[in-house]
Amino acid sequence: MSIPIIDPHMHMISRSTSDYERARLAGVECCIEPAFWSGQDKQHAESFFDYFEQIIDFETKRAERTAGVDHYVTIGLEPKEANYPDMAERVLDRVPEYLDRENVVGVGEIGLDQGTEQEEYAFRRQLRMAEERELPVMIHTPHTDKAEGTERIVEMIKDEDVTEERIVIDHNTEHTVDISLQTDCWLGFTLYPGKIDDETVIDLLEEYGIDKMMLNSAADWDPSDPLAVPKARDKMLDRGWDRAAVRKVVLDNPCNFFDQSPNFDYEV
Ligand SMILES: [Zn+2]
Image 1 (cartoon, rainbow, N blue to C red):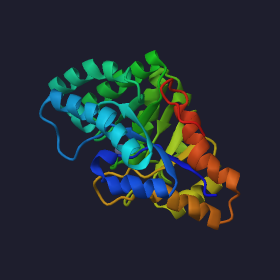
Image 2 (cartoon, rainbow, N blue to C red):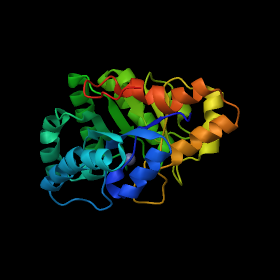
Image 3 (spheres, rainbow, N blue to C red):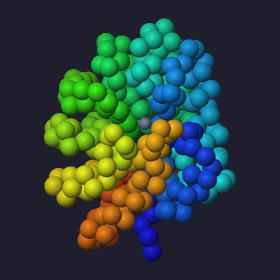
Image 4 (spheres, protein in one colour):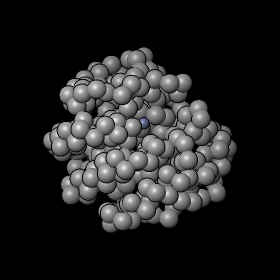
């Protein structure tokens, strides 16, 4: 029997129903949809609230109705749009009310894009929101100057003195693993063109071990693959990994991470 999967980072709002069906057939039983940048900067705080509502309500129902996929959400102001101070302030003021919604399992994705002061302000404020509520946090590391950005993120996590076991630092590469491992945070790897490919990730897992390591597809509107995690699962098996180790990476780890949220009730 094939090993079921939780993909902890999928932007299914940018995907079709047939993608849900294909992912489910390949073993993806559960996914987490973090709030993110929609491809174009929003002009109004209200646009965020409609977007949050859509992923919380419509996407969760669509995933369940069309493919039987258990769908959860994280809510946050991502770094790109944190750079519009007035709009950001209005969004941040209302993030807490979305964190109380029944299928919201954390804060995210938050982090750094260009590394501006505004981004750091929004990041720190949302780290504190999560800490107050004891919720998981999903952190986006920047595309450019990734190592420096990840170092800065680690500095801010230490500085805010928040619970590292409730944080996943995502989009790691071979250049950031050592930096992220200076914390007790979990590590995410995004199998995505321009980020990292599955063979490289599997090499890293063989080198660094699989504790607190998770794989995801991002599955947004750009070239990406909602089946990236099932394909990596199959490659790990092909490379001779034992089933328990594969299962830990693709199922048990994401399950244990999000089980830190009272709203996550997927049963392995
Ligand atoms: Zn994302």
